[in-house]
Image (cartoon, rainbow, N blue to C red; front, side, top):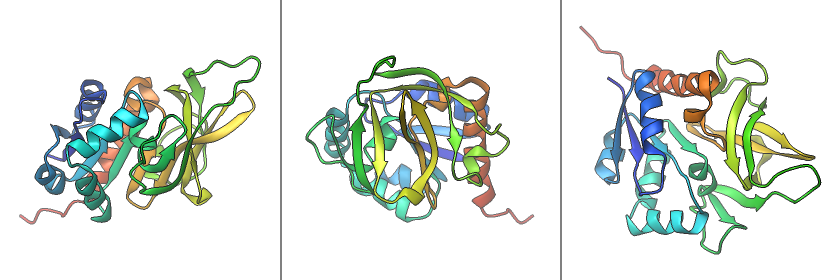
Length: 214
């Protein structure tokens, strides 16, 4: 059974994420232990809340280096919502430095007539990296569920895997750089498309595992 470590720092939507991974056939293990992250087949970093308290919790639990090692090891890694944002250098939401794994800044949506902040509810993705493992079997512009006031702005535009439009603002909604994937929306709350994305991630993990010899 595919074991996926779900990083626990007291601020993630762990139950829903774990349920989605279980439905996809994986065994999620909620943990803040470095050894478990190292031994797992893949890692998921969920997140709900504010930027500063999140990175403070990550550092208080000594999880920065294990997260970096997991990514550097080449194993599949999936960040969700705030688990995407804290991968960046910093955020306009707070003053704490991010993990600095993806160069760039987390920016706040600009107020404009006719839009709400936070960007909350269903919206359509524009898939940029169409060959990403996450998007396999999805329609061209899948509907997914967002809840956020801030969006990531990567320096390297090539890491952008999907975008979304809110009002006149066209922003990054997902990134991929090799084995590192992360999404701003909540796949665990995104009905059929979201469950497909989680299933795609699990299938991608399984495809990389050694084949057992009888």
